[in-house]
Every structure is written in structure tokens, then in C-alpha cells.
Image 1 (cartoon, helix red, strand yellow):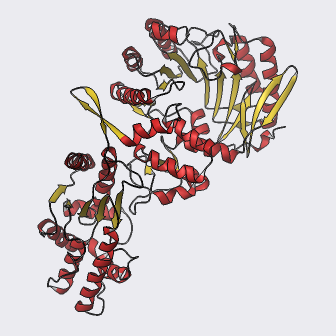
Image 2: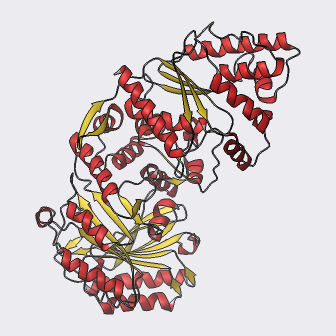
Image 3: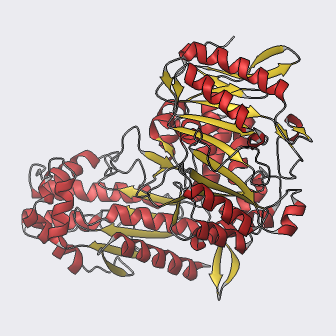
Length: 606
């Protein structure tokens, strides 16, 4: 038996399953577990569920869970009397929840949805307003005026509810569905791709349709980086979804074919005649790992990555959800609850890492999530890593990505200028146009490189402004370090982006000793393709540095910021084929310039 007393009271939910429908929908994955031909919930099943529920409530009494969820099947086949009995059971044992949600079929609802005082949230399964699609899905559809009237009654009742609308589509979403959602203005709306489809063109079409939905939905924003769930401004996801997917909390399943996740165990509940059978499923750690792989592209708390997949950090795969910054980047401030995600440019590289570290079961879970049910690696790799799509004259054109050329780029700028942020944007844009794998690389390096023979000594001078005995020895150390580091750089293939390098060395040496000298430049790398200066006014840089809340280095004080800014802007050298100055007026402009530069680079080498 399950020990329900061990549930996580800070993150738990109760799921009641009603596996009965009138007819099977063609897109449903649970047909084998549902009973069809029903216009109501049979009393014999209802009584069994009530008996099971009462035993559970008696054990967990006097608590508040985050959500009570009625699913199925078609739980809206419950009538008012049945709902009242369930409501009284929860009241009897003082078990409550701030969210009590039910999936509601707009054409099959047996209870008074307008005046019901028990539920706080309705998830209305519209699926489609198109009659032809409805026939294809074998779904009894509602006309828009019927739904409008229904939702109007819910909104104007004495007990208004949180409303979610569910839609589904194959490869193309009907415009009327998007327009209806915008007009009705529910709290949340979901457009699910039909996960029974397969094929290359299907996946391409789904990606473009989801972009279209995001663009055309008025006053909605996506849930994190999720492409198909949208929230009205100032709204949040359902608490049940939060417990299940974001918090990986405990779920008590009630009813036939319901699943419970309690403590470290997972159970399947089966009603067999007069017996109640529980089958032990996978361990919770495995369940959480599966959940991580399904949710990592949308956004999950960092603490679960740290606990269940810590080795992922070495690969620099993840970005922060709020500002899209590399979580390993030195200025990125994160904590255990920071939401992080896997950008689509990293899907294939991450998949290759999964292949080396996890079983095929987990590989397929990840592939199915990004392929919307299709786990064919050739299809997924083609769409996400070998091609990119671009709108030209309102028509989507498909272009092949190319291997990264041999390009060396130096990015300089004063502290607080945003050069690291620019490079993050730039790399993200480059990955849209160039193949990104072991044979086609984009490398980001910082200097001084402390792993080189003279790296630590060079770092003391550049970062701490400490003279290495005298100017001649300092010059020798910087020269040797320059040659050593450029030898390493020369062995790397593809696009190399160096954040801070030769120009900072020169500026620091001249400031300290009041004369210029050769610091090893040109001996190994005699030509750089691009020298980029990220420029910003001193006052803004000073405020950004102060906001970090950590002690300043010598270079971060105003008088030095001004010196280095002038040096970067005015520095000229034949070592650089091209010099570009980018003024960091705002993040949007910085991102735009990164996009423009990446596209220019692609056009040069395609």
C-alpha cells in the first residue's frame, strides 16, 4: 500500500481520473485506457472512486494541497450530485486547495458549470472550431457563438473561474481558432501540435505555425520558452502543472489508471472488479529525469539540474530564462530557483551528450519533446541543425546551414560595456546560420589564459596591475603568453571569438610604463578577421559595475574606464582586417547588431 502521510506538503496535488467518454478522438493517446459510449459517469465506478478517495483523505486530513485536478476521459460527464458528494468528502476531512480544476468538454457537460461553487478553474477542450477538422478528429465541436455564450456566462457568474482553452492542430492552425482565443481573452490558452504525426515537412510546418500563433495572439506571452502554452499578461500557469512539471512535487492519483508519485516511488492504480491494485512503476528520480528532459527546452529550476543532471554544466548548454545568458558566464547571477532552459541551437549537441551518458529511453523522451511526438533523429537534426528558415516577401524559405569558416574575432570594451552579453547574443545568432557540432565549431575564449605557461603571471599584471619585477620582464612575460595563447587558438577550427586580448594587453602596458613595445603580436596570428569594440558611456558602465555588488578591480574605477575607452576606440593595427564599433545603447540594439553581423558573416562564406 501507499504511505500517503509522506507526501510533500509544500508541493503536492490530487488527481481524480474519470476514464469515460462518449466517442474516441483520433488524436487521443489514451484510447486503450478509456471506456467509450458513455453519456455520464457510471455510479458503480463513482462509488469505487469515492471509497478510495475517502481512505486517502482520512490519512492526509487537515492539509492544503496546491491543486485538486479532475481529468479523464471526460470528467465533465459528472453531474451536480456527484460533484457535491466529492466536495463534501474533501470538506469532511478538511483537505483543500487554492486551485480546483476540471477538464470541461463544451458539448458534454452534465453539471451546472455557471453556478458551480466548487471548481476554481475550467480547462475547456475546444480543440477546433472548424467543422471539417472536427470530423477528422472525430470530435463533436462547438460553434464559436455557442462557446462565446458559455464563456460569457462563466465570466459573469457569481463564481467566475480561471479559464483555459485547449486547441489542437496537425500542421496548420486555423486562423479562426487564434482569432477566437484573442477575442474571448481566457486566462491561458494552449495550442497543442497533434503528436501522432511524423515527418520532416510536418515538423517544419509545426515550428512555423507556433511562431505564427505567438505573433498573432493579442496580449499573451509564452510560458517560459514553451512554444505552445500562452498566458495572459499577469497570469500564471496552473498550479497542477507547476507541481507536476516545474516543482516535480508529489501527486496522489485517485481512480482507475491514475498514477501517484509519492516520496521516492511511483504507482499505477487499477480497479479490477472489487479489488484495488497498485503496481509499482519507476523510481521518482527516474520520473524527475524524464520530466527534466521534457521540460528543459521550456524552462526548469536550476536546482533540479544540479541534483539530477549536474554533469550538464561542463557543456555550456543552458541559458537563463529571463535574459538568455549562459549560466556559466562569469557575470551571470543565478540561484537554485533560477529558471534555465536549453535553446534550440543546442538541441543536437545536447542529444549527443545524452547518447554518451543516458539510455535510449531518455534519449527518445527528449527527441519526442522537441519533435512534438516524432523521435526520428534524422528529421530532428535536419530541422534544428542543418537548415534555417527565413521569411522573404511573406514566404518562408529554407536555407542550408554551412560549416563554420576559419574566422578569428577579437571583442574588446571597457568593464560594464556589455561585451560578454554581446558575445552571447552573437554566438546565438551564429548558430542560426552555421552548423554546430564537433566538426563545425564556434569557440568563445577569454584572456589572459591562466592555463598557459606564463598565464598566471600575465593575469596578475592585466587584472591586478602588478609589475613582474620590471618593465622588460613584464614585456617578456606578456609576449610569451601572447605566443602561447595564440598557438592554442590556431589549433582550433571554425569561428573563434576572443573576449579581451591583445588590445587590453597593449593598453595596460602603455598605461603602466608610458611607452609602447611589441607584446608578441603578429608572431603566431598575423591577421585577425575582425576587431569589435563594444562602446558605452562611462556613467552607464560605472552604474553597471556598482550594481554587481562585488569589489572593483583597478580597471573598473572611473578614471581608468575613461582611459581604456579612449584606447579601444582609437586603436589601429594592420593585424585587424576590419574594425567595428558597436554602441551599446540598449539590449535590443545590441541583439540587433549581433544578428546583423552573424547574417553578414553567413553571406560572406555561403
